[in-house]
Length: 172
Image 1 (cartoon, one colour):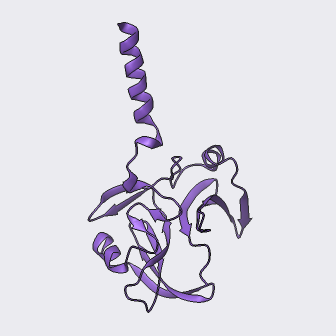
Image 2: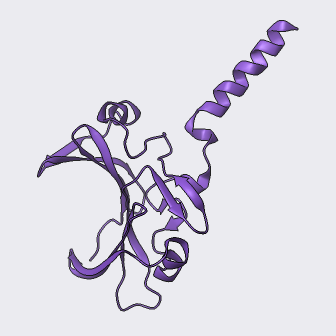
Image 3: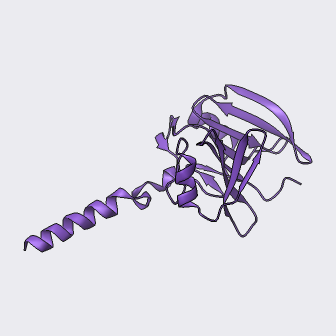
């Protein structure tokens, strides 16, 4: 009887301690960053969730112009311009916890459990096949690529994950 109880307790601890127990609402991959879904979430929804952006400006990315919108809650997006509705094309998560009016506090993480603020060593253990690309004082790691070519990246500065990003295959 004691061994059954001990085994049950061990299973509960192991199942509840990993990234698999985290909410899907907090998941970041090639097409979503928590509730923000690329090519589906509108800027109107972003304003409802996070309020008005703290900074908003036009920016050239590839061969198109996008709106870069930034919230102090730790979220930056590139959104389409001129379309109705304006859709989120790319998402950047800059803080470990993102606060939103509708979804509350979200601890955004990848499927393997990588979060903003983790050390580069943890990133390398979780994603051993991710090759680093270093330039301008920081390093990018491509963590995953979707069949569509969209990809998930981590930006590392000073041995820390500073940002998680999801990108479309291309903007042109």
